Amino acid sequence: MTNKLLTNVMIFDGTGKKSYPGEVLVQGNRIKKVAKGTDQIARNGAEVVNGEGATLMPGLVNLHGHLGYADTATLSAIGEIPPEENTLITMYNARKAIDNGITAVVSGASSKPRMDIVIRNEINAGRIPGPRLRAATPQIVTTGGPWDPRQLHMHHTSFELIADGPIEMRRVVREMIREGVDIVKLALSGDGFIDHTPEGTMTYCEDEIAAACEVAHSRGKRLAGHARNDTAIRACIDHGITFIYHASDASEKTLDALEKVKDKHYVVPAIGILYVTLNEAAEWGISKEWALSHRFDREIEKACATMNKMLKRGIRVTPYGDYGFAWNPHGADNRDLEHFVNLLGLTPAQTLMSATKWGGEGWAGSDPVEFGLVKEGFLADLLMVDGDPLADITLMQDRDNFLMIMKDGQYHKAPVRRRAAQRKRAAAAAE
Ligand SMILES: [Zn+2]
Image (cartoon, protein in one colour):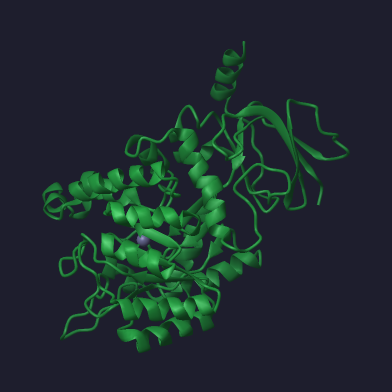
């Protein structure tokens, strides 16, 4: 493979420091050299890409994806999709993720037991486009848990895998690991969407959580937990559940405990789904009154306050989560970056650091895969962005602004020129 030299770019390296003019040499699937300025790196027959002042940055990482969710308006509608169609939908969503600059995804639950597994394998084999993918189980839930859609007189399915008691839990987790998952997803707490288990309730008991974690950890697998309330967050810490989802309501004691083991966990609040459910879901039958009566206003307030406390303690909070519903569809994921700026008060640089550096660390875990920074030796998952996302984070929401998308040193989108308006703006700024 010819080396690629990306020059005349503003490098946002993923650490959160401000961008600088520079150039980057990609050799094979790795970043071979990073230099400040232009004409610093020997060309030696490399393909030279002139970025015309565009931003070069690491690929985005989503630590809470649901590629199998089908942008439906109800949860049970996902269950009604047959596996064949659902596989194709997952494939299209994988493509949509990387088309939007998301080059790696940790799944936060699949829609059907083998859905993520087969898509991950096809992506890895190079037969379909998509991000690096950690495949997850469906939501493992109790009878009467948040995504148990059954009725006594009638069977229904959504995206759940029911397991009750430690014995059944062990069997389900073992079975899914046999099939090839990387991540075991447990629905530990209830959720505001579900009347029979609101967010304050716990669904799993200690012995069931312990059983799942014991099996997963003994086989080198990581876990993710749906954890809206304090007890559920605490269970994630106590049982070593790496990915803590939502985490809206953490007591000071729990925050103290989490801070002590902060290098072991990632918190992914999925702020976007709360925001759109409260403000933009009326078209799909979720009125403002309904959202308020289900306390979505309070949940978003609590989540933002808790995330701020966590960030102050150096706990890694990362964007994305729960895209894949009609009012929060796939492809809109990068709105979450704007939510981090507007709702959590982070700077765009902090937000993008979280989505790249922390995301890369979270995806890798203890595996020796390094991406998420523009750094020599790191894997070449890189984006070229038309404009300066540190000045305007909403640039990331228009996929035409991704002038180049590279994963593992290969183009998913080969470089295109900057749009004239942006070029002119950059030139005027340089004068
Ligand atoms: Zn989720």
